[in-house]
Length: 229
Ligand code: ADP
Ligand code: ADP
Image 1 (cartoon, rainbow, N blue to C red):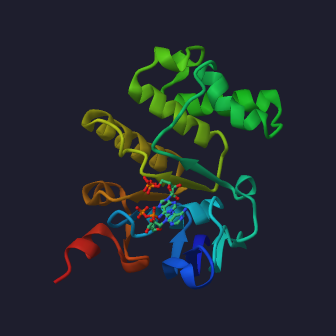
Image 2 (image 1 turned 90 degrees about the horizontal axis):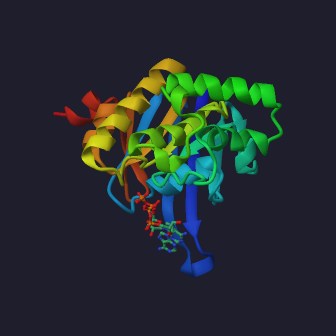
């Protein structure tokens, strides 16, 4: 089964003669459980592509399917995805538990189900002892894990990561990268991860989509992409 299908996806900003086309008919199939990294220079359209998968940006042409369902007209909340951003603003006045539970509460998930999901996520992320603390009482790494916890509890079919490591210092970046890898190993959730950093891409990717100027130039494993004759 295809977790994500991109079929001749086009994006234009603006209308008419002044329109600026930034994605030029992108095609890709991402398998269920795969960890795929979209890599390429700043401005090549990575973030726009990810935001179209998330439903945060309208698609100008072509088709995007998630779990074999075309989602062009589906609201972000109904897409079975969870997105992890670079600025992972937590609610400062809420506890760790409340931060992780909030997205479920507004979706009217029953309290005992919320408790079970948060407990499970806290266990995976080793946040169990901190559930009653406020974000300011946590280290940077712990806060980052709470942000991931919020995504996990949604139990989405797909994780979307938009440069989540780019504003972190080197130590925290390395820690968080390992955390993301561990998460993928344990949960096996299909992941689409955007970065401009080639080293990061090589370390994380099972497969890479190399973008340039709004097009995919190469698709393959890191070995295939970087060891071309
Ligand atoms: P990347 O994520 O690879 O850095 P983006 O997807 O952010 O690239 O941007 C791709 C192109 O689309 C860039 O030329 C950018 O200026 C343009 N762009 C992005 N968002 C908008 C917008 N809201 N309106 C107009 N142009 C945009
Ligand atoms: P990043 O690449 O880190 O996502 P940017 O500074 O490129 O951040 O973009 C920040 C915001 O500005 C995004 O919401 C993007 O859609 C928008 N944006 C980017 N380029 C343009 C543009 N040329 N015109 C209008 N909005 C833009």
